[in-house]
Image 1 (tube, rainbow, N blue to C red):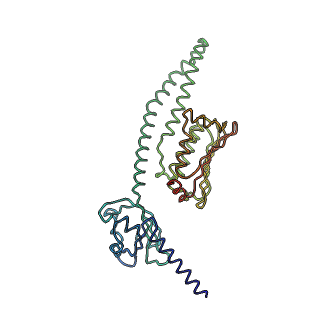
Image 2 (image 1 turned 90 degrees about the horizontal axis):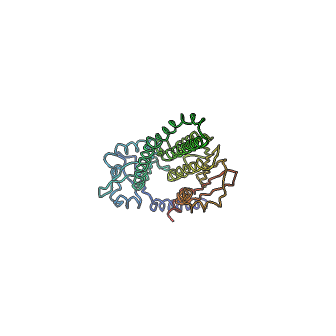
Image 3 (image 1 turned 135 degrees about the vertical axis):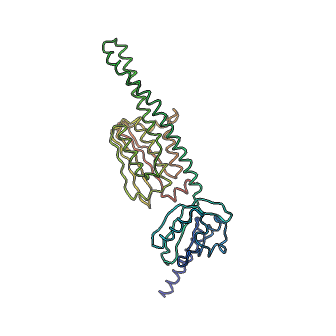
Length: 352
């Protein structure tokens, strides 16, 4: 009786595996490592659709048959590393049956039930590459504008302030009206230079790929503290690698805008940016300052007055299926609270 139940459970598990294999929305290949060169044993329906080969034609072909010529050495390296038991994630260029090429993300690992086989998943990242190119173009333009502001307007204002300093000392013997006028000019220059510096800080490109998200964010927070002479700290709870890559740039920009708002309005002397990460639960992010705070009921008036920063921040988060709330009270600081769902849910919400 127990044996029959075990056999039935095994058959049910096998059917579930086959259904998942055939209907998964990503290309899946089973590769035979026992032959040389490694050969394709099985492909799912998605792979047939993406590559244009029926399974009857592609099964038995060398595993690198679908790889662009210039990417073949890297593909063979992936096979060697997988044979040594290393799970591999890499980007490559593959070819369809009609000869068209497209960028892919490849994840390869040994079959846990048979070490002579390798399971390979392939994702078409054409759209992702396009977004990266657009983001790189935007980052380049932001850097150009920041450099022009720094080398032009910022330098001119700083030079003017320097030239004005000797006149301020001479004005001690001048009329009260002249002293007041000079003080006003100095005050305007001080505010203008601070605003220019904030603009340059906000325009700097994000080096997420070079530094990694949390390293880049830690640098942003530290630079913000130095720029505004306040204590700024980043606190991360949970595994950092559980944050989905699709959340990184939107979160970075929202936090950057939140810090900019603190610089302009909060009059704070400390800021805490906190992440709570759990792969099975929501991503929670807060940006909290100890500044003068405000009445949240006035936010609608700010929108009507043309201050759309918070609205744009909220739209970024809503696009990911999350929420953005502001908690504040006059004299008690402000907290920007962001909640994002686990990645799969976030994608579904955004599509809706």
